[in-house]
Image (cartoon, rainbow, N blue to C red; front, side, top):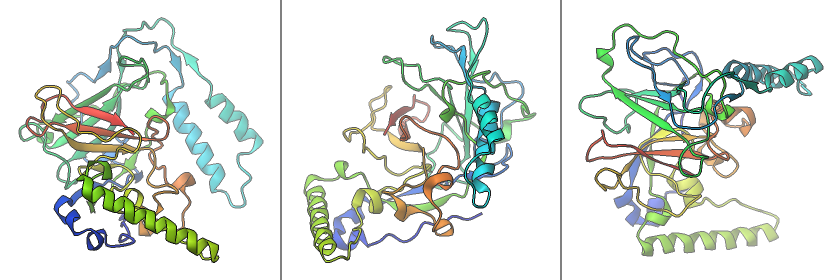
Length: 344
């Protein structure tokens, strides 16, 4: 399986040669439905987890006794996929609609307390051998495993995420845990990932405009204003064009990716600093709700040109926040320091 990013609509360094000094790379992971194993880099697949090591759990105080069953969420997605795959489909049949109503039902877990441990969900695992831009972990660790609590009920607001990232040396793992624990119910279906294999692809990337030097940033904005004026003139002549924009087409690709630069399209751009040593942190991983959308369609892989975002741009079925992305940061001075994160 290969996924190839199209060439950018224009050479941004030809317009702004100074950007060459800010050029970086990021590895697009291109997760797609498949059957990964524990020795593969994957999203939502089985993890290389030692049978004699305790599975990560959440013990933060929050309600955890009501939600949907993970198995129902997976089955609901299969039913919908089969319905939409039928030719000339009008959607689910009456029988399927009844089943979907049942699968969407929430259930209660009797007797569970607000601090009782619940298993975290294994979201992804990434081997450094597969991901060129994956930052180094502590020591000679070669495998990153990402977990999160299946409830949005953490932090000062009571509506935040709880992440747990683990680095390990894959060659030290002996017998692998074949049936990891799962929470009986989850508070949010978007935390349940579908098993996906990866097709890593390294591409060029540039910083978010808000973090570029002011003079360069203002020149980029001025050029985009001119693009928009040209578009309006062409539109009046009946020949509308979509000019490429720095944020959407030329700098930071959408989708799951490792390394590179974070996007700050929801909040003000800023430098994340390590909570342990105040060192500016670097982007470790981006978990995105979609691979592309109407504003970032120029990044759609060549192998998938012509496919609509519906069904095809959401292979993992993971949804972050309100259809956003999760950026996870690591400390370059000491990868063992606590990670940081931002939702955009």
